[in-house]
Amino acid sequence: MARQVKLPQADRTVETYALSGTPTDRPATRPTFSRIAYAAAHVVSDPWADATPWNSPVIDWDATMAFRHHLWSLGFRIAEAMDTSQRGMGLDWAGAQELIRRSLAEARTVAGADLACGAGTDQLDKRDARTLDDVISAYEEQLGFIEKHGGRAIMMASRALAHVAQSRDDYRKVYGRILGQAKDKVVLHWLGDMFDPELRGYWGGERFEDTLETVLSIIADHKDKVEGIKISLLDQAYEVELRHRLPQDVICFTGDDFNYAALIEGDGTRHSHALLGIFDAVAPQASKALSALASNDLATFRSTIEPTVPLSRKIFEAPTQYYKAGVVFLAWLNGHQSHFTMPAGMQSARGALHYADIFRLADQANVLDKPNLAVERMAALMTQYGFA
Image 1 (cartoon, one colour):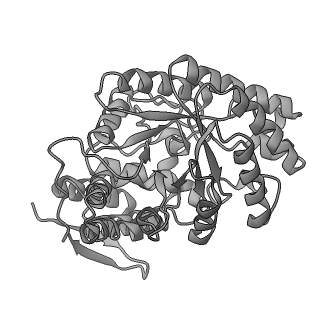
Image 2 (cartoon, helix red, strand yellow):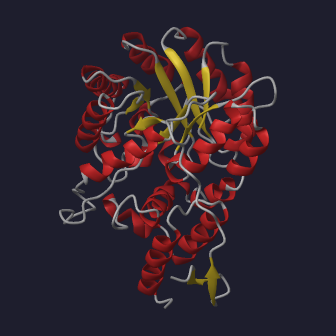
């Protein structure tokens, strides 16, 4: 089969694009890294049962768990039930509970498998959140569920808290209450409003300098309960400043899907670990790069991971909250699922030109693991859009 496909271009012409990439070899055994690396994993819809995807999406649990085995085999920890799995954008708290329960049980069957689970407040509509105690109760419910099933928590940013909080002290109160009762150390989650516009003003301020002081004060007051913090502001300078000011035993996890290569490598003094949605889409390449970094092979690290950065920047371009579509698109092209449908019909959040650009960049970054299948599926999708 010819490895070429017709793709639309921004000038309203159609090109015949020929693939040039080479699939990345899989490791013979589960690799080890010198960085902690969480991949935030997506969920797979069940197209046979997903009759009302906007309101009651149905998950294909076998395919969803199989994808987690794929990530574990490549050396990753999994950040479960996060925004990559469409928390608050198709996957509700009831679905998240089932996902958490199943993933924790599945992890126990895999030697070396590890994961942490998102604890948020998405069962509480922001319109129903009237007091800080409402938010605290919602966090307590989710943290309690995760701990009951033997999991560790990532404390996700809360739309409800952003809605009701009046000051930085309100954030200190809520986070203090939850961290104070957590059984294990927790990872905090600093998600910028480019990922979720409803989080604008989170931590009680508009300026990074002010919000940073709030975050650092919460960590200082509860550092015995904080494993680390994931920062997703898509600004390398902000992350470097946070990383420089964290207590020595608190980990900085990059969530910067624009600048992760440089942040993971570090500046010779400090580096970031990773909790990234893009690792869902480029897992084999990130695994190879992190393995090379662990062996101090910087040339291989850079040559493998740096080509994935333009791809990631395209997937996470504004409106950034729709990045999930690009992640699942690549999972479909690479054969991890048999269809390109998503909870809440999120595949429609991006258009043909966006998917065509992702296809080109994925090829150039060696991310298309099964080139013939990718061409076949891309051709079918482009035909749907009218680019036969």
